[in-house]
Image (cartoon, rainbow, N blue to C red; front, side):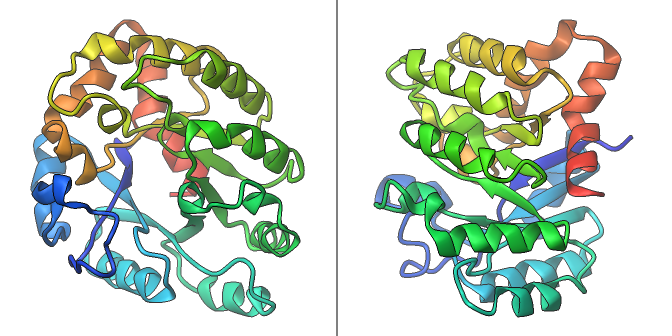
Length: 276
């Protein structure tokens, strides 16, 4: 099976639209397009990628779909649609025609409402997703995990994937509460987890591979090797390391696992989850 990078981004940089890219992130204050990523994937024997939204507009979804039409290595799109609108079914009927559009994401980590995912209108949107077999990427910080546990329990048949391990506070080295909640979340068999963005949750300029071992130990024990998938979070990962360096953290950690387990984590699970 193919090796898949399950999480990366493209954008045409705009300071207003991409306000989250602050001045301490100058290295990514530029355009990132398929021509930037494709040679890196080829160099690292990665066959394809899942491109994930970075801007909360339908224009973003259309932008990613256009890129995927022109580049075969883009195997799937996780777009954005307003899940709270009254005509959500109409929007999903429209998007259902695009084969490479696999699912949607909302940037819940930026929402100030601690109950955002439990809003009736948002829940109605998730119900609609399942009718069209669309996936949903959960993007939250570690302190939002308790809400996520309540959220996924409401939708046992919806395919969920937790982005970036739920963003544990790797910089501080704290993981006790995160571990407790990850275990609870992983009890829901319809929830997968992306091994991505660890490197940017730690110290950008002062990290070593062993900083991430305890977090990897915890998610492997919680999710097993059938529900984990590798993702680079390119180009955001370049804030802290090269593509090769962040990939090496994952490949070295799993180097003693069986070939079958490694194949699952490096591509098969993503292919299964996103229907590639």
